[in-house]
Image (cartoon, rainbow, N blue to C red):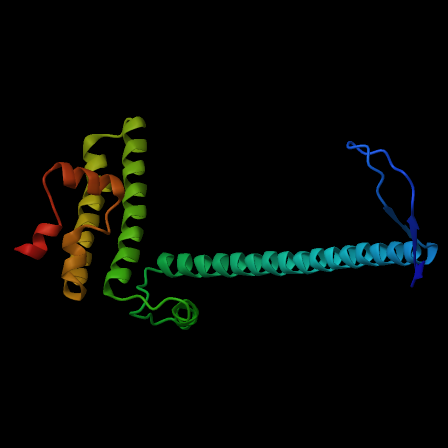
Length: 211
């Protein structure tokens, strides 16, 4: 019997089964056309899968390239902003207060496009500048001691400068307290090591809010 592309043979034969009883066996044989069609279908699926994988890989490479380019642009922009901030600090200006020089105005304007510091943020930046200057002065004192400089010269040239520098810190704290007193009292602007010693000394900034 023939049905479509499938040849069906009904064979009446005596087949030895476990129970020894002869049964009717139905044998289905696929034609050559059906085998060829099935092979073409499998090949088409494989090619389509390969094309999908290639397209996905291409899109992934494009996304990765765009992401790397974005990171590079951000890095360059950050380096430029840091350079402008360094120039502002070297000129002794306060970001947000402004300066008189035209060049200083242009630098502050560029920085203010990305930073709008409040009183506490401005204090943190000024304090960081103060710490850098303080470290430089301490290094100068150490170098002077190693060079066997006299006590009078050491006091006149360096120690007095350090004392004046601490006066500047107190002025910065006064300005910062007027802008955000809780920020100054909390000590968050200090380094982690300084906050650790303050905590060991019994200072708890949270007690200020409960008092």
